[in-house]
Image (cartoon, rainbow, N blue to C red; front, side, top):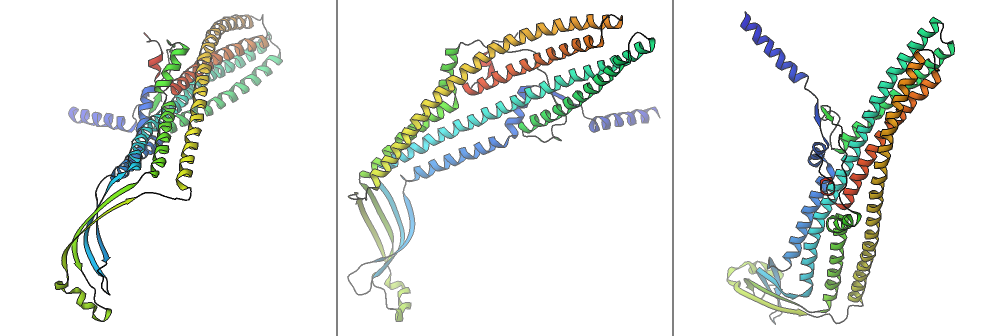
Length: 434
């Protein structure tokens, strides 16, 4: 009987574990890994990569032998033409454009890879923004919950003091109003926490049901940048996907100019064919004679063709001018991008310095506000201070704590934006945290 009871207990235990799985805490790196496996934009970039490779294979095929089955008429000097049927191999001996077309296709593959890296960086930044936004709302909710409990206790205390005759009815009324307001702020914080959590899961490519057992962990340590502003500029020139993309696009534009200019040079093609030929087709009245095998003989065809453009109506020069304009546009965009990238790096770098100072000040204000609140509470409980003074002290603590949280996550968001601009992770530009 005891054995049966033990087996039943184990069954119930395992069933409970399956029915009520535990919530798993995840850090930001785990959230990023989940996003990299699920985000739709990354799958789109993979398809773009495949397309660029396919385009390269098309460009490369221009230099290969093309074999087709053909049926063509042949001239034989008689009243009726002859007919040839068989395999014809065509090969381009010389076309100056083909080399440039292939080089452009190779460059487009490299551009596609960098665009995939750019998409990945955008996904990382999206996840970080959502992650830090959720943690801010989560911690704010904790503060609002604590404050709401304190206001409830304060309302009860005001009622007790009024009943004892040491406080007026006005204090009771004020305490009830404050409690209702704190309840409202608490409900708003709950709603904000729910929305930001859903936004985090959406940035990871997950639905609410799939992510219900995931609980993001808080950030304890704040990374500190170890690089100077000039070092960040140089890193961006090397690693920034946007800068590398526009550099390759500029190279592709130069190749396009060469490709269009190569249209001035001759094109040489060779065709070789082997099959069977009927030297003279019969009239429609005797069409069945054309199927007679005696009339078909093995035949070999060879053709050499060279074409040189003499007059194109200005088409070639217009195509060259169009390619030159495209190159100039990319050059202007490159200059603008370099200036904008430097400005963004400088702004983010200076913002980090300023936010760090704000965090230090907010931390000091929080400590002072907490000491002041403790004194105000003791004074009110002993009948010395007013309810308004106690409320002001509590609001000071709330503002200080929320201000510190906003500064903390603003710092992390700014750092995430900076690393996205440069194209490398925080670990590459920040000091090691011990």
